[in-house]
Length: 235
Length: 235
Length: 64
Length: 64
Ligand SMILES: Nc1ncnc2c1ncn2[C@@H]1O[C@H](CSCC[C@H](N)C(=O)O)[C@@H](O)[C@H]1O
Ligand SMILES: Nc1ncnc2c1ncn2[C@@H]1O[C@H](CSCC[C@H](N)C(=O)O)[C@@H](O)[C@H]1O
Image (cartoon, rainbow over all chains, first blue to last red):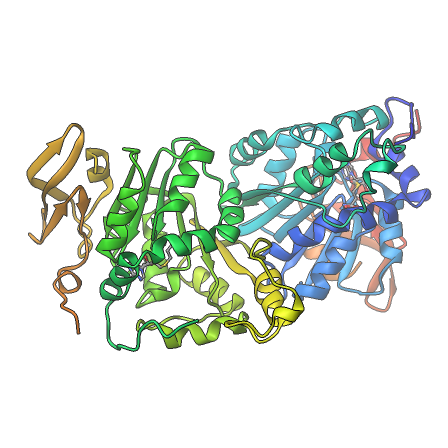
């Protein structure tokens, strides 16, 4: 991990426009796909459903739901105009659209969305409790919120990430996620950690690497801890 | 697979009392644990919650939820008195209790259960739609029904099981499970197949075995298809 | 079974409350007795601490 | 964006409906225009087909 930025006080727009411009949207897509695809496969999306991808980055997740489950319309929302522009550039599908917006002020009508997806983005919300209330507001009854994060308390290897990012990140543990969902009026349907079985882990002799002191640590981070998924269901 | 029984018209009680007497409750526990433990880990059970295990067999699943999540009280219901008796014999925990009952007439008050679990049992219900309505009735709002089955349409290797069992089995596909849950008034929180990564699969040279013609078939059955999990959430 | 189970246990047929009769205890455990539906009067036995709430027609069944 | 998005899109501030002004179309796609809140009058631009619904204070931000 390199020190990408030491500026402080940047906005989501500034920080992630920068990431988009340097192609990090595609790098994240590749890495996140290892676990995201398993969480996406679990979603009870029916053909014709409207799905919102919060912090969509390159937008790969929504496009996958359209391909695999016949989702009717996919909206990818991102706070970075450059991310949304990149995402729009990766598809010609007119039932997939991107918009610029912020997690704390979701620009959608009450009960207008069937399912909400978010990968590695929720913890950037300035007020995550408010974001959950907003999600509960826009979901129709029985709609789900699939919230996937690699940055969480039990994943001790993720704690240092805050040093490299100028936006304040929320680091909840598993229980705090469940409690916050319930506080916002969402039922908790499941919680799980999804291991990344695909990232290549070199033989022991290769350690320390640039990023990992020991093979054990890398195994724990990816094969054991993985991505924390919390599923909320709107009443 | 051997022809265990060719009698017809047996009741759940007769068929499974027989299984219990010959120790098959423990054999099932061992095999089912490979995938059941992953589904159990996902359940949003909080400390103190009341959990009902439908068709509990040896009762291992409920005991695991008490150990790992601090469930407050566990009730295992089974239609076979011998299964319930065996299950009771495997624990001294006074907050774990077993009872004899049928899936179609659940002997519980409305809204009295926090979560319902069922592994490899639901499809024996004489009227599965009615059983789902009964589950929706006894769950409190936000309570979940974790329904895990190895016998389902997409698992073509399971189709022949009906030949060996005298009770009529319901073979739904993934979509039929989701539709039936919704019809009974449950939201669908997730649906997934959980591979069995633990069962030993011999080298190619060992095939055909008693049970499997080819290694590919055995790999598909266990590593790819696995256990179908459908999660319902009570409104 | 403990008495806490009684609080949520209901008659499988009409879902009315059950009354415990002829109870035998071992400490806090009810080891034997009969659960009687306050509405329809149907009787469900508790044997070795395990209540049998099968509807009567399934309980009485004899092997084919 | 297509007009179907307009049906569910709302003002991020007060959640009221938005009216489309100065729209430019490319087939069914709205490629440019302004979304105006029917209640508070706040204006949200559509550029290259992408509506920007950031609240005005986040939209106007300049680099630190
Ligand atoms: N408050 C906020 N509102 C809207 N988008 C935000 C946000 N905070 C962060 N984001 C966006 O969330 C994304 C996080 S990176 C993850 C991108 C994508 N989901 C993936 O899996 O690869 C960035 O694109 C960033 O611009
Ligand atoms: N209609 C019904 N009502 C109650 N129990 C039933 C039933 N049909 C089948 N069962 C019970 O369901 C169990 C299926 S075998 C599975 C047992 C256990 N869940 C495990 O994972 O190993 C048997 O114990 C059987 O007696």
